[in-house]
Length: 144
View 1: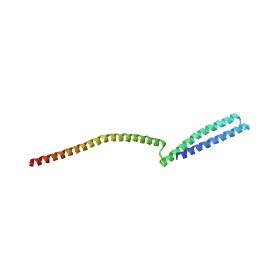
View 2: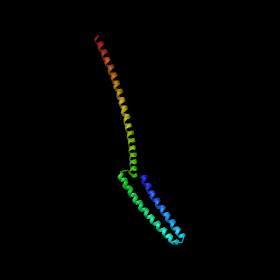
View 3: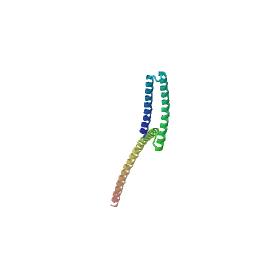
View 4: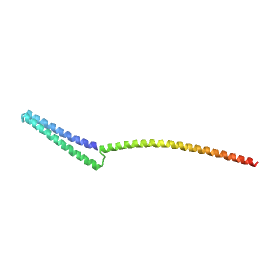
């Protein structure tokens, strides 16, 4: 969409430049034919260039305003808004990366503690089983 407006803008400027070139050539021809003096020709061209420059600035301002209104109506983000969002996304990606690393760092000790607790429980269970077996053996010997 923005390219469309740029093309229209540059087309307008191209038309203005072509018109200025044609007018300069016309003035040069009039000077060559002696219809106006060289000094008058220079004044006319200088006046034209001043007018064209002024009109170009007015045209740029009007076109810029029209483009701004059109973009606002279309609710399209501006280049600055996109750049701002890109910076924000990059910042959030960095934060997510740091949080992921932090989360992984906390998971490792928890896994180690869980594994150690399971081993301890298994060892305790085996010890309890051995103790129960030994107690039964002692009770059986005591009966005999």
